[in-house]
Length: 207
Image 1 (cartoon, rainbow, N blue to C red):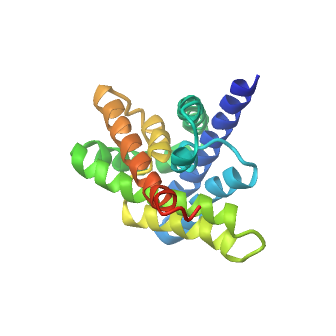
Image 2: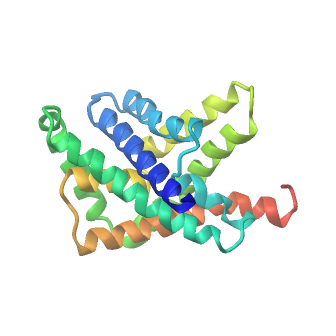
């Protein structure tokens, strides 16, 4: 039952990141788009949904059973982003964003794996900062600013977020063997980046 709940939570989280990606694609101003994209992560942290890039950073503080939860989360996020992409592709709004999402997907898939990996590390760090800020800064304005600013930074910088890219690849119908390999590289990069600060905190017993 608990694993089923985790999967449903992960699907919902993936759908919300897909919604964030949708509103981003609908904007002509990238700064506005990056701010609105953060509604996805904001929903995830408010309702404590299972998002891989929001959970991977806490692996150093967990036991090995947490790996199963992470796997369920990753798969659920993939399903959720695919569902949102399928719904958008079959709606009237898709035509206005089709060319843009195809260009975004092409840029990512034409990049080499080392570049993808490095850019994903940066995004992983920012995602941990955003999620942990919401968890630890209760009652502070920083609790909400800390969610939106890191998301804006990773989008405007061009860093790689594996769950967001699952949505873009699904929406642009770009899935292939090479695409899946790129997603795995992004997953690894996000994972390493997400654990850098937690490993520092744990090693020096700051948490």
